[in-house]
Length: 94
Image (cartoon, rainbow, N blue to C red):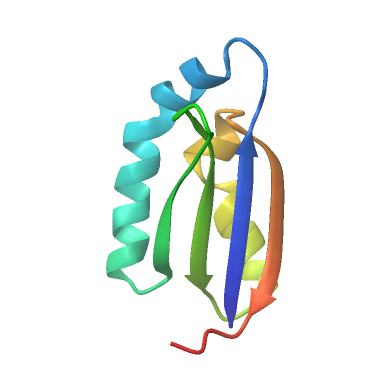
């Protein structure tokens, strides 16, 4: 099953600091899951001013429960970077 995840960072003054503190471990974990075929595409959501304000991912897992478990273990969730997360099932055409 394929899912689109949009996750927006907090909007407080320390939000970018939290993102940068967790970024290396988030990216390393992302590389692992990309190599396994779970992450199809992913990257930062950028504001009009050019700042990182969230993330967008296309992922593939066997179930929504697996997506939720995977998200719970992400450094951006554990590090309180992502504040608003939306997960919807999609069916990619290409």
